[in-house]
Image (cartoon, rainbow, N blue to C red; front, side, top):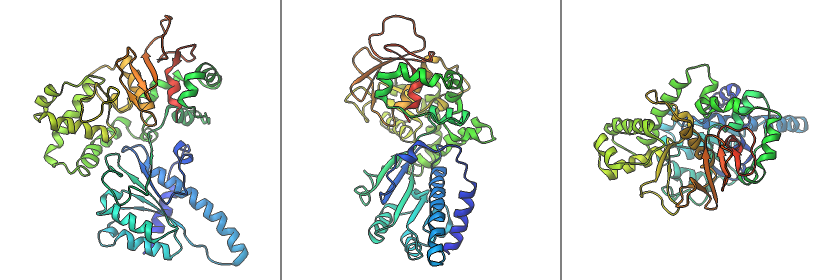
Length: 407
């Protein structure tokens, strides 16, 4: 039985495309015994698992060659990628599978599509407690509330967020360079020298428009129509991530799709819940819940005033990233909307972004106040201002593209 899974494992990691090493790979503490990789559909969670499996296999081959030279024994397979789409798990349990793998010398399981398996959190806990030196890494939909809804694993799971390609990763893919990551504090305080140093190697504005249109999702690397691929991904977010995990009646899918279309037409925008509720023929409370589901699925970003959160009404709604914002053929996107969306998408994963009662457009981590503008109009800037059309900055005029180097 295990041999069949190892054949699939070898086939997949021999063919996985890893044109760049994702930044998250070096941020994870792989010594943790239960690791969740959360991320929106389409950002590359499966390829991320397979890339790590490939690194583990390469490490095993080196260790095994040394081991065989010393003892002349047959190597054991210590890591295995498993997708729970496999029909084997309709009759066999995860604990049973993990036991057989462990007895055969396995020590690292990489589990994909876990949410399709009943009682998955309970069995993960049993595996964690029963096999003391086994490591389990699994992917999770962003719609899943791992800690809040799964008390079996809430105290032992370490969660990491895989986002789509950053602007830095996109440029590295396009150029073959290995440009570094910077912190928000470095960008804020040293942006002039950092931007000059980077602009000696690249012209970032040459790449920014293409990135905002198609560079966030790895699907752009494939020889297919990107817009069609992203449309399929968006529908899967609704029909699987929201419908299945949130257990919504399938008859509500048309209303979810219409709500998403309204957001595509209007964002960035303030929410008029009454008008939207009337348009999609749902109550105000249900409409707000559906908006939250779209946010959880990484389709929207909700901008709240400081101190406010769901179920309060957000001050403003953005598409989750600029690639999604381009997925509407009935409107012309203005630059200000794109730049604000870019600002939010770059920061929201690792920082808290809010609206503020001050005159600034955004406050980050409750201490950094920012404006976002299209042009540097040479007026005195009273606060840090992210400007979309400059390559290098001075004083409070900061190149917006630098936020794409935060991961």
